[in-house]
Length: 349
Image 1 (cartoon, rainbow, N blue to C red):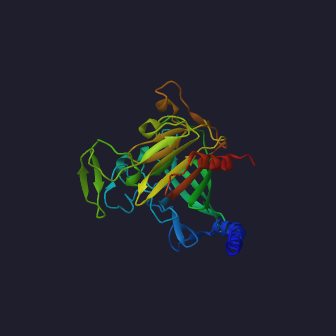
Image 2: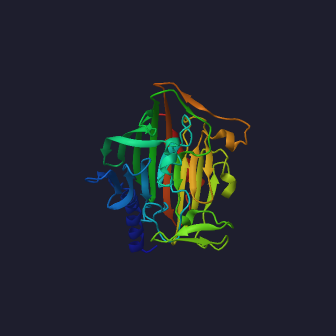
Image 3: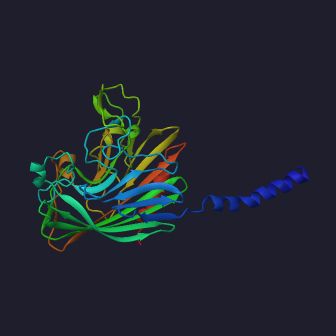
């Protein structure tokens, strides 16, 4: 080997650990309250990640929109900020949220501006009343307190949630710990719609032969005939190998949705935690863009073979933990990578 080439190779090898360390340098996560708004922005470095929205005009707090490292928005725009060709179904599906269809008979999940005033008494609200923590750093932390209330503002449950935001390479992570404490005897009656919800961008829907309604950026609605939608290209896979629409109603420790957005592959993984009730969760993963983990809908997911009615006496609490990983790159996140994220998240501390 030529001497100069030999030394050049040695220098390059010596530089590898430094280069690797530089590549692994973690960006500062910024958690910033927006003045005069019920809104908190989360950025990683100078790149937007998401916003925590909790105005009185919404029936629950949400994280919306959600952006990848490259700036791709992976949540549906409708109804807050409709994008061209946005589906207009289920106006209560906004970004990422956490609530449930049947708490003492009240429907928290389906409440939205679309419910007529005379029917609102059948629905519940999740009202954020305190921001407990906003911390920037290697991990960004946002903690808040909210009340689950009826139309008369009677409190059924008090919620304390801690959200942690971080980034590893081109993978963004949201860790959620939610504690619900009963202000009165409460039953989460077994129901389909719950608990952690994520409404996906149009591209991440599964292609369908059914007719669909879409809006443009001005809110005009058009009907697209089944099989002619050229945008949707998504798919699901669970930890148990269930794919596509077969993922719905099955159990798994994690579930991934993936598809092409622009030139990149985008993947979103929801990871369950072994300390959650009724682990592993059922996946309420729909082809039209609803991606949800619901451990409490056992009756409908098992065709009535068993049921799960979670009861809390006054003062009793229940805790739910979830990790969401948002990835963007040339390839979808692998099962091995997902399992590493799961092992880290579920490690007993």
